[in-house]
Length: 219
Image (cartoon, rainbow, N blue to C red; front, side, top):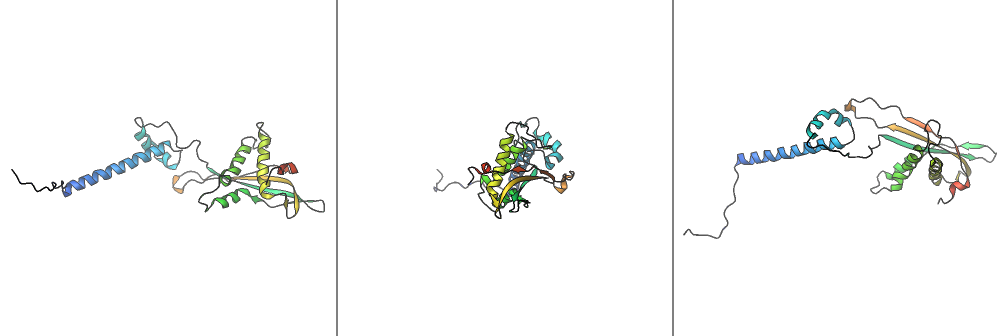
């Protein structure tokens, strides 16, 4: 009988050509998987410059075997930067009124968010959702109510601004408040070939009276 030493048999040693083939096959699999996942991502993502440019290639890979009937975002992400400003009219001692400068409410929220690793949901969403509430309940042409909740939307927006501004400015009581909304379309990348975005749209709301009831419950 052959003599045994108790040592395990040596493992298989791959030749250099075999290692090259295995490495190349692995690289092809990784790249192919990455391209496939990228194609599926473009298929389910909202329409954008890249997906429009390579639509035929993406559809040729996805359909029909890998068809996806869901979308990455619902609804599509915002394509405009909307900023909300407010200004007030105050009472002067001589019986006249004074119109104050605009206060950037959205700018205040952005300043609180930038550089903050855990920004507040209030800073991120309160003002934005209040404007969405108002915009969805008013006609942008004449600010007329379009549903029964329109007055509530006005009060909600007004009270958010007054909570930040206060009851007085430089010792003068606030009599009225006005809002201005600026919508700026996010420009497409330079290589997309898309047309330049339209000019910013500015929408000014009418002056609203301010009374003690508007401050009820505000800290």
